[in-house]
Amino acid sequence: MQFQHPILLYGLFFLIVPIVVHLFQLRRFSKVAFTNVAFLKPLINQTRKSRQLKKWLTLLARCLVVACLVVAFAQPFLPGSATATQEKQTAIYLDNSYSMELNGKNGPLYKNATSNLLEKLPADKVFTLFTNDKVFANTNRQQITNELLANNYSSELLSFEQIQLKAISLLDNKTASKEIILISDFQNTNGAAFPDTLKGVKRELVKLEPQETNNISIDTAFIVNQSGSNLKLQVDLSSNYNVEQPVTLTLENNTVLLAKTSVLLNDQKGIANFEIEIDEPITGRIFIEDQGISFDNELFISTGSREKINVLSINGANSNFLDRLYNDDQFEYLSVKERDVNYNLIKDQNIVILNELNNIPVSLSSELNKLTQNGGYLVIIPATNSSGYDSIGISGIALNESSKKITEINFNHPLFKGVFNKRVTNFQYPSVQTVLKSTNAIDPILKYEDGSSFLYKNQNTYVFTSSLNSENSNFQSSPLIVPVFYNMAMSSLPVSQLYYEMDSSNEIAVNTSVNQDQIISLSNGSTEFIPRQQAFDNYVLLTAGKDISSAGNYDVTIKNEKVTTLSFNTKRQENQLKYFSDSDLGNNLSTSIDDLLYKLDQEENILSLWKYFVMGALFFLICELLILKFVK
Image (cartoon, rainbow, N blue to C red):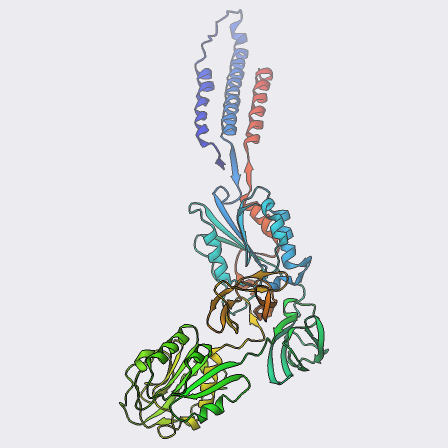
């Protein structure tokens, strides 16, 4: 038992008052003489004993009256737990990821959890509530009712370790005891173990379980082949159960039906193909009908306009191998002799190749430096006898070493992304007769057998350390030459993808130019925002994805004029529907919000006892009156 005002217990010293009154009574008995005293003596003894008992009972009753009154004013109570009387801060995490869209016993898990919280939380309780994308700090249920009911599912996904750390950061009172409540279906999306409770923090878990977890998903889509107006599109599907009936996919272009197909899922996997003819870019949506999670039932795609990559080769040596490599519709290729170069063309290029120039004039180096500073790319193939390379940041080019063999490929470099199915060990590596520049670069792409670099990248510049002419090297006949030069050009202007993932920082090159006061914006009819952007001479680099809240096709506009369309989709990790078991989650686990709130109410409940002590004081006061009246 504890007391709200324990200092009042000093009032128990007043118990001495009835004791003093009873022990030091001033009344004295007077003796009265009777005849036959011996006959009356037993009666007198009996009367004195009764009076003595009456005194002690009266004293006890009065002491108990005083004691009950003092204790009642001190307001005693019984706490429901050891922490019931402590100052407490509570943070509630309410999972609003897409997996919470599945139905539980009373409807969608997230919507039902929201309603239960707003209905069952005490009206006067102050707490901090946060979801994957919003925070409501130091609030109560009345203040957040409308906002929380309007809040929807989020594509953002926090790990449970991040959730705990975020909850602690929101509880800023250092002296109060901290309590965090996690309400979720507890999906195990990455296979990691469930984190332990943080030290000094009380953690409660509410595991909400869906009734049905069957789900079919559109996982990805990509262009298999595109020739002229013919487009072959592949769509991959998966399910977490055996689907017996074919799944129907529909492809729309600007809400107009473009094609339909069906696919049968074998081993819970399926591939569908669309072969269509298009005369203009597609702004499309692929979708299926499924009763599981809805976000993975559709995939937004956009082909955009096919922009050609401007490639300029300035040649001091034979350029036949470059002419063959860039003889494709996706490149706007121009090859000129070093004495015939028009410097005004350089600023309009995406990539410039210096093919064994003997001399780089100051005026040319100035234009090349401007190109790289404005986001363009430069490829340097040095000549055996050359000068002027210092002005473009490449120093020390001189004939200094003999024959070497190229023996090491940096498979992790972006130039070789998707080139090799596996790491090759028996590759027929090329060699060079003379090395013009020996270096151990920070970002090597191809290396010699001694570890020095044959090809490396320095910011926006690719540098070969040897001439590539057929007299000095057999690199032109090596299979490596095609992916190397092709991907160099492709990386100079990142081609728009079919779609981008939300919650990622996607760098997207939009092939347009803007004035100083012009800004590119993204809009999908209901939402418009300005992404982070960097303008170069002939394109604008956008960074978008994390600032997008809903999947869809977004128009790229400049002053309300459409430039192209970009598509964004939610990551597919939320549809795995793999959950932590009860044993993984450990103690303090509840199966419903009702159970948790009842448990917390019992722990925080304080049983006030002062009324019982007031009733006790009245009881003993009545006892005193009865003793005085009936005890002789």
